[in-house]
Image 1: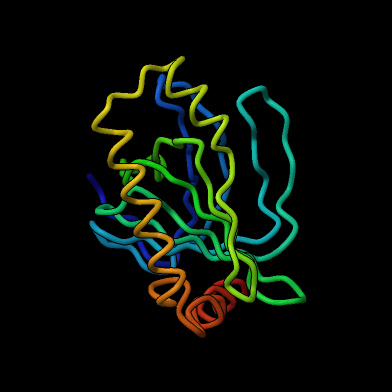
Image 2: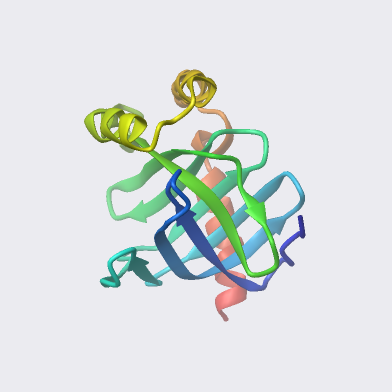
Length: 176
């Protein structure tokens, strides 16, 4: 597994358990890259869905990927504060082409006041049956939902005060 270079633009590829592409983010600037952690920033990047539709992100975002955790976290900077979108997913890999992970449907949306909602439980259950997620994956994902909720309550990692703002400032230095 390679390590993305700080300052370089990379793509992010999200897959489903069956191996099919789910979504591609065209360009994210690497702010920190190591074998275990990638932090990236993007703003108004093109996103391509599996059916070929495209859309453009509306606000700056800081993305947090870790090779030891079954989730990734996107902090979106909006006028009323930072909104987070947390994807339950496989740990990332970086193969020189793109940062890649498997999206496992469950998501947690976190608001600026740190209230949150677990989303897409029906979609998760449907895909778990259709794509035959192994029991071990189901167990890992449920444990990682608990870990994410603990991080939210503890304001740990990307939920820490100033984490997103600090990395956004770094992102802006690459945009000049």
